[in-house]
Length: 301
Length: 301
Image (cartoon, rainbow over all chains, first blue to last red; front, side, top):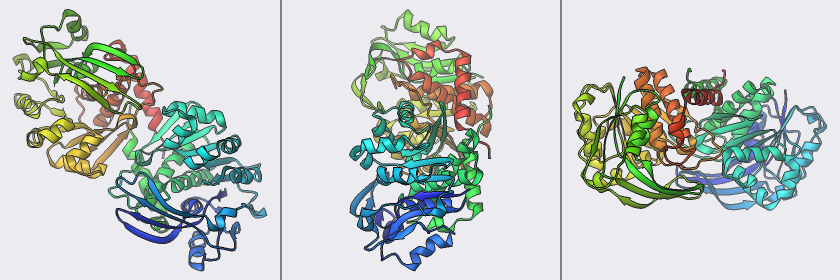
């Protein structure tokens, strides 16, 4: 089944304790779609500028990602510059140039309307809602958000949340959104806003999924080196939604496996700068790491 | 099989966002032995003062804990006063009165010498080593330590570590001891100091176990309310070692189940002040929560 993502496509410049990268392809839609492309056909809605060249387009086409919805606008592509220090748990934004992203009005091509799974990447909540409403018959709509929208557009965000099935959010943002520090209560408060499934990303501590009063935990993959955390969250979402779109399985077992595939893909994302590692994966790499998660977490009663 | 613990017995006075407690029974040996007593016969080596009354002794005897090694010395029992703020992840020590603990020279009674499992609670490393050497034929010796000893007595601590099978330590202390922020490398560095099994406690994020190049993760139990974190680490160790002593199973599967029982017991410890919840448990409470851990972590490939 096919999977639609709306989000950002960006040129990222970044520095981590492991090195520097200048203007590498990034953005939520890029990380999500490259990751999810290992699982299911992906369609992208995003905007790029006139400086977006053949080389960058080939990243998408080489992964057979449908770019009919990748609009080319006058001006420059969105740019982000950031730095990670210490344990790299948080990015310090040094510069944001919205460029063509400033006037982004996402258009869903007619050929995308049959998409069964939708991921609303971390963009302005009214834009997320606008896309969501163009796809009334999808099987599952998930969205991401961030502290910037939680603080800056709480009412608009709530309107979006009221119309999605699942929220994928990091733990600190879940606490901010719910106003409670307790994980279980934070998830319950978010469920009352709309999403019946809440997925919390906990960085190196993994992720957990709340649904119908049950909780499922997956640890973070214990890498010896995390070189660049950029895109980890979107790669997590790409693995999660990709597996759902591939399997069509929305029952408890399917959601659990999806959470683990999300954790697997996030762990690959951070191994190298930008999309580096994600563009060199094989299905065997993914299955091997998935099985490692099984062996790292299972015990017999 | 029987289990010996050496550690502190204290009167704790503490304040958390949920309330206050004055001079309640605490200390590493108390939390450990009460917890482990649900699994196996426990023998305590510790010291108390003249102010330690019948009521406190009954806490041990009611759990059939062997107190032949509980020395009564002239003076007052060890006292600790602390406070937990915010997310309660760390205690702020307001006052420590070592009292009889200052001259503690642990003596292992002859009747304890057949103990097969030993836990060296968080005390001065040379005292841990002194006890360890009196028990040359035990099946497994585990020890705990803390930042105070890691900074203050690094060489003595290394001598103790060289003669134990397992270290149970919190994540921040593992980083301090190993000099590396990376979990996997920190565990490997600690293994090179002696313990072939390294167990890292990660607070609300659970715990993980490193052995022979494999890793096993258990999440923290998602409580709605943590009222008093005091003793969580020693209760974790009590559940872990208690299960090992009960089962005698030191193979991979046994260690995994032990880590989960440790997490189960730590989760009960923090539900109420002091030993409150730990003294009212039933075997069914413990098994029910153990099974919840299974359902929160398992997935099918």
